[in-house]
Length: 242
Length: 237
Image 1: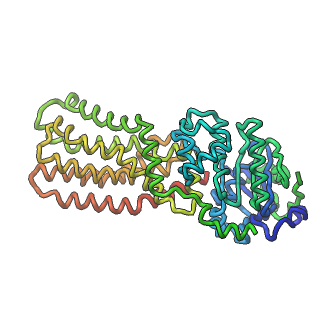
Image 2: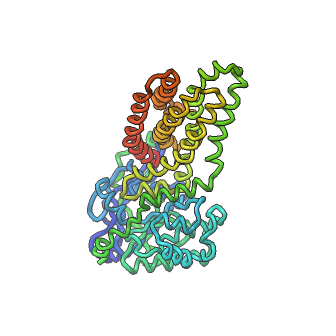
Image 3: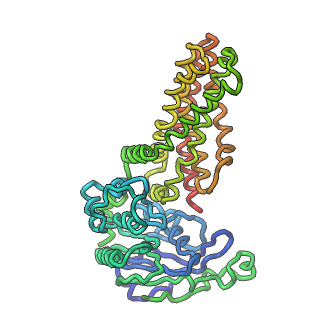
């Protein structure tokens, strides 16, 4: 339990999401082992790691899409897989494939996410897509499509937990800044955020989890792993604070 | 503080698309992908138009083969259009968004299949009497052909959805999809052609239609559940 520095633990009560000794594999290769951290209300965690380090797998494990893992994950004290349902009720997830249908207009896309027309227009204006709301998404650029996905963050009453996989990809400088401002506003209203990004994310308070710190001591293939005792509990490292 | 807020606003968090929104979205998408609607119909019409050229124009032979030919071609046309049923949604991530909702996947799947049937199966059934006339099908067979195709193609869409869901994560499902769902298509095909044949032979075709209806009712209840399970498995990768 030494994985998190005291000041982030004091933020508010019990952690929303806590991860203990998590170990994930993909296609017979162990991605990371002994991953331990917790996410509190009002805080943000950025997951960093090289390409293929397992960031997306970690994210998809944490939202319950991947159920093949070792270790403990719990949401508001309820262990997975039982806690998955209540976690999802409070989750806003934007994945690498952002859930924007290319055959729909931005307005229709947001309507699919339950927004009324007025709410959708306001959200699109907030992400700088005013005037593009009636074009098909396949006619928009990659960055504009990303903005359509991110417009969900501007709908009223957003979910308390945001899980964003590479939200900054394809965004321009102004887009990144306004997204960071939106994230900070979310944190200050008591929400929390889990984000993966290769670029620095300039928000406060932000902790970093570097998957390179949790790489298994062996090469990663499960054949080699037989020679090692399961390292999940023995790996006990500090999570760097950003 | 955030916990209380969470409880109070919990209803608003999960912004589920309702069934009508799902249906409307699918209709919009279908209307914008006209090729997906037209291709199966074109296939259906052109292949059946070729048949007299291939097997000879003797009216008696064509009349005897017509119910089977039309039914097999309707089945293949449905199969062809089925492959892309969940593919776009899988690739753009919206299928994963649906799977994350607390609402069961049953209704989204049902909406997709329903729209798929309305834009492929129903037009096929509507065209079938015309093609029956081309193939010298007896006039007694028009109605049974149409009704059996309406019931049958709906079952085919539902059953095919399971195969499409199982293979959605594969890049080129092609023949695999056909291998998975063809055996499940067989009862529909047998009773579908049986309906028309019985009508042409002057027997009552009610029992065959009743069985087709029973297959449809079973498929409507169970196939979306199976598709939903298959989608969740496919999304784990």
